[in-house]
Every structure is written in C-alpha cells, then in structure tokens.
Length: 94
Image (cartoon, one colour):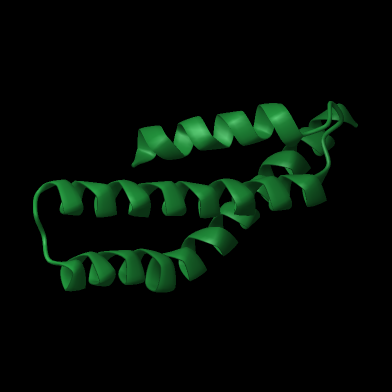
C-alpha cells in the first residue's frame, strides 16, 4: 500500500499542482491522492479475492470496509498533510 500511495500522490502532485506553493491546493491534492489510493487498493484486493475464488459476500465485505471505514479516515489525514506540506513550502519562500 505505501508504494501505491506514493505513486498516486506523485502523479497527482506532478499533474495538478501549480509551480507556486498553495496550501489550499495542497489540501485538495492530498485528499484526492488519499482517496484514489484507497479506491485503487480496494479494487486490487477485490480483484485478488475474485481470482482466488472468494465468495461474492466476502468481496462485498472487503470493498465495504475499504470504502466505508477506511476512506473517511484517510481523506482528512491526507488533506491535512497536503495542506501542511504546501504551507511549509510557502513559509520557506518568505
């Protein structure tokens, strides 16, 4: 998961962030990175479960847990980290 999250965050930061640091954009990019990372990881777990022959109800539990319980925690944390990172960059420029 950390490698996946790092890859997603790097792509989001390179594609969406302007050259000048902006804490608001950092929060948005952080939340987006965290959310997309959880979605991709959940999909990969679901695909793995299907390939191993797991029951559909088990796959639903995995996807439900990933989306309903993990996502609400990860997105605000990622947004806070993105905001803090961009705020740090802004303070270093002054």
